[in-house]
Length: 212
Image 1 (spheres, one colour):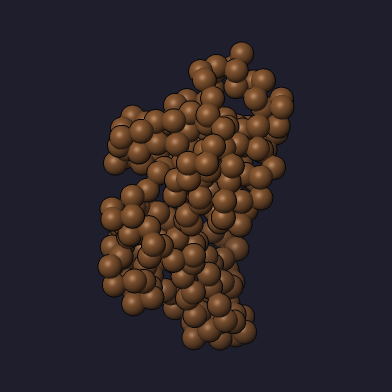
Image 2 (cartoon, rainbow, N blue to C red):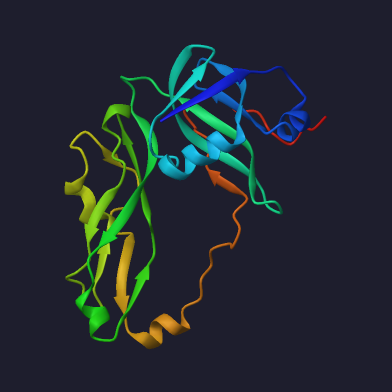
């Protein structure tokens, strides 16, 4: 995936957005470069790769391998307001969330249970070239009362990868219908921020709250 970007100066964020461009910053320990990207191009790329795959960010012919570290969202308009790109180094591990895709139809669901997905991604540390696009987890053998945990995906990752989540965290379970009906969800309907800032960078990515 490739995105074209332009360097920008301080300020003028509102005008950029009105012109269909998205304020962003590319950073790591050593650099902090304010840029802008075409809003529609970013939306298309982010829908395809999310924040777990590499993107070639082309800044006037200077191409950097980056991952999307954070997207600040306009909660009312449901559109991105600012993006943080973390510039990776080929020989340094990077921390990324990797989507977990559940495949198969659990026997417990056919027996009347309900599938309860608790986590759809795991966090790992791995070299950029080894980042998996996703991890497939076969759930067809789950009976009512069975569950799968982070520990069940260890063998599916590159040997060099380090799992950052607790291994006993549940990913998915098949529960009796009554339990599924009574359980309340605690997830916010419209999260305002996607992703997290990288602790290994400097204070890094600038705030996007300032307007003209």
